[in-house]
Picture (cartoon, rainbow, N blue to C red):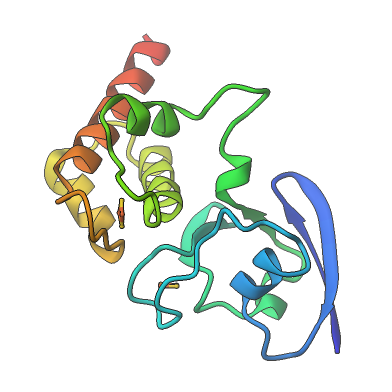
Length: 158
Ligand code: FES
Ligand code: FES
């Protein structure tokens, strides 16, 4: 077993894991953060997307030991001080979800995009979400939600 210590959603966390344990299994298992969804386990669906040192990564393609000493944000860490993240608010307002399975990953990818590109074009939004699959929505409302979150950020900055 290997002891992994990391920051998760701003708090120190850790666990003893097998060397081959995936980050998603650390998050959903010992750390109890089941908001990160496990879809394909083959780095295709994006449901498991989290931020690792601020970068959106598919946590089924990262070993838990690779996160040692690093900072992870999961969907549970998006809201701050009881306030939903603008992306979360926009997904609600724009009906950017149906079953919700893909939603945590979609929102983590979108939040990372807006962190780097606060005013993305629709083409940039679509490109950023290419690695996140949704079986329900047809994507139109998801793109609208990210667009609205970007506009909300612009108004906040003004
Ligand atoms: S579960 Fe990680 S990409 Fe599908
Ligand atoms: S809302 Fe059902 S998979 Fe996206």
